[in-house]
Length: 311
Image 1 (tube, rainbow, N blue to C red):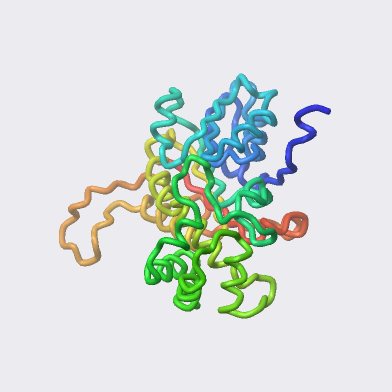
Image 2: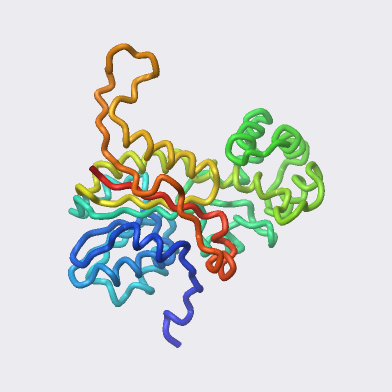
């Protein structure tokens, strides 16, 4: 049996829309900041040949291993780097990969991570409460729920999970410590909120909050977005796919800010910031997945694509 036959099935979200938004052309260079299993990467490479090159980045070493196998036919056109996209500019510089004609970020958790039980991202099966994108990271979700003070834990669940019962959940977590597995935590949250309401499990927001905190997702995204400006060539495209409101709000605010000149506080009599516009919006509204895609891949239902072009 060939190695590719044993690789996990991967369905990239908004694939057609993302490649079109990037305006992929032969002979140009692109960066996939969230390599995952290589779905977007492969489509970009196919359209950028002959002569195209792609730099793929992922903080998860398992994603690098899988993508390397899946993209074996494109080995001469790809550079795969196991690192965090918060180091985007340095990675591009070290690999002599500047400037680039397009950058894509497909944010959040990958199907590979979600479906690997022992990674502890899901409450569908009992597993160690881990949630790290990379095993090299120091802190796990278990560390957070067992060490943080109650008020800090409540703030984390409220701010990152937008959970209205954050204080009650944090109080119950502290009472039930130590907590070491996914089902332990899910049951504790369910005791506070009650049983499932609609399609969303009561622990969904708490798990999301912990995952964001463990992996510093919003902080790293903010850092990476700023660096894309220095990496993109003139008329280069930035494409970002987000899956929840906190990510999308950050991307929207960044793109909106970078389309403006002065960003001084309102009422400032004379501009002191010296800020110059660096992007123009290609689509003022988010691009959602089609109904057909949502039906064939339910995990795509919350996806939102935004695209901007370097001035």
